[in-house]
Every structure is written in C-alpha cells, then in structure tokens.
Length: 411
Image (cartoon, rainbow, N blue to C red; front, side, top):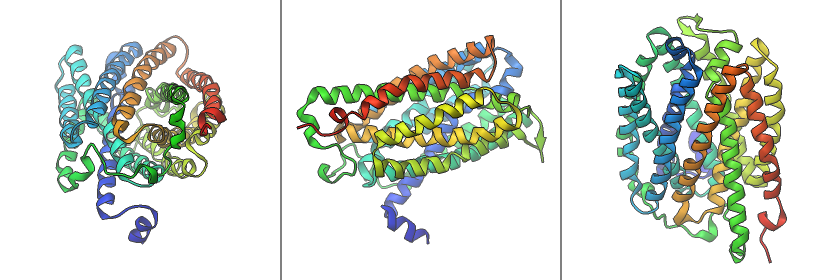
C-alpha cells in the first residue's frame, strides 16, 4: 500500500528518502523556530516581562533572516550540502549555549546562534524540492505535513521536559536532537544537493508561461506583490505563534497542570500543531488544481473570521477553535512556496526563497515586539485582533494578484 501510494503520486525510492529526510529536518527547524516562544509560559516565571521576552524572540528571528537570505544566495552557486551541514551544527550549539547561559547576554548569544542555524533550512530545502521533484505542489504540501507530524512530537516532548525539569533542560534535549540530521544526510544521494538541477523548464509543473517574460515590468509587479503578500501573511502568523503557548496556558485556563505527568499545555499545543497536517496536504493539492494565487486568497479569507472569533473567546471554546486556525495557517505555507517556485527561474530559486525567508522574519520580528507590547498594555487575546488586521491589509494585494494582466500571460 505504501509503495502504491508513493508510485501513484510522484516519488521513487531515492526521492522518498530525500523527502523524508527533508520533512524530519523541517520538523526540527520549525519546532526550533517556536522553541523559545512555545516555552514562554514557563520562561515568564523567571522574567515576568513579555516585552523583554518578545525582544529575545526578535533576536532569534533577525539572525534567522540573515542566515536564510545569505544561504539562499549561496545555494544557487555551490553544492548545498556544504551549507546544509551548518544547520544541525549551529542549532545544536545555540541550544547548548542557552542551556549553559548564566545571564541574559549569553542567553541572547545562544538564541542568536539558534536563529542562524534554523534560518539555513528553508531556503535550501525548498529550493532543492522545487528543483528535483516533478509535482511541486504535492511535494511541498507533503513536506509541510511531514514537518508538522514530527514537530508535534518534538513540541510535546520539549514542553513536558520544561515543565517537569526546567526550560533550560528542554534546550539541552533540543541540542541533542539537533545533531541527528548530520548523520541522516549520509544516506541521501548527493544529486539532491546540487545547485544546478538538470530539469527541462518546459516540463516543470506550475511553471509560469514564458510569455510573461515579454513584459518585464509585469513580472516585477508580480514579484513585488507576491513578496508583499507573503511578508504580511508571515507577520500575521508570527502575531499568534509567538504567544501560542501562553494563550493555551492562560486563556485556555490550563496553566502548568498535568495529566499522567504530561503538561496539559504541551498536549494541547502538540495537538493544535498536529491538526494543521490536513490543511498542508489539501492546500498543496488545491494550489495544483486552481493555482496558488486563488488558493492563497481563499485560505486568507477563511482565516479572518476565525481570528476575529478567537479575539472574543477563552477557555474551552478557544481551545476547540485554535486547531481550525492552525489548519488554515499550515495550509498557507505550501501555497506560498509554490508561488515562489512558479515565478522564480530555477537558477535563482535559492535566491527567491532566501529573499522570502530573509524579509519575512524581519517583519515577523517587528510584529513580535508589537505583540508583546499589545499584551502588556491590553490583553493576551489581542494578538488575534492584530493578526486579523494584518490579513485584511493583505487582501487588496491578493485580489490585485488575480488580475488578468498580472496572473495570466500577456499578448
């Protein structure tokens, strides 16, 4: 059955190994993006200052942006394997320094290295997947889903350790887990890390019609729109993700209580992330059917009322609704990646994803600070309102992207 499933879609044995490796690495990268924010409800017991904690989140985001942009550029020029090796090394080292940190300065240095490490993953892996796997939309969707599955397990484990033993001990466990992709790389064929995939551009699924390049100005407008939209959507996601554990613990009225020695917050956080899996799979299929532009607009329109609804909720209703929001948020990521793959030529794909993961985190850092300030001066659930406003701002740009002059070939 497993063999039939993979053959039916797009994948052979080597490609399957690469996609599974990428999905596992993706789980680590995304879980570590959220590592400090998801432990914030425990860390706050030591600092009791959301503005300071949001500043630490910002440090991680900015260093992630720097490494993402630089590594994206380099991946188009050299064998990506040599860059990818730095991902497990830097993330492990950063987590270890956080564990050993005696003061705020060393803590900041550890989080900076963690950001540098996690920033390496996305521009390289997404570029390689879009170059080497024929069905980009489905591949990116399942890559997202695989990452979510692993991420939910990591989240459950790390929050449990943080509550039972301490948040720094959770970073020690993360340091140990971080090194594992270094050993898994041994089984991956080197051809998947090459910077220049030998692909027939005319046969790549979802590739933009070459006629669009006859109007260079239209291409530029399209790219400006796409990156502006993605930056806003990532900012909206950051507004909620940065404080999700605190929202679950405080607004969900769970706190640090446990069931079978496992923190209820950890269980809920893990389940909420896990329930994003169907969204990521279906969105990859949807974008292949109707196009990523329309798919992204539909998902954004669905997100807004859910965010507004959550703004006024707490306790059980909030906990029941959060998985719906997570499914919608998780569905955006594959669609955004398909958009980049569609509009960026193969030989600049690393730059395209590097630019995306370089600019978006910077805006995300600003949103994290605004979110921390909003929580300190208003209420914790005000971040839902902030996220909905950012999404509403993106709608005119998304509608403009549907324009026949931009989204369709010109004569």
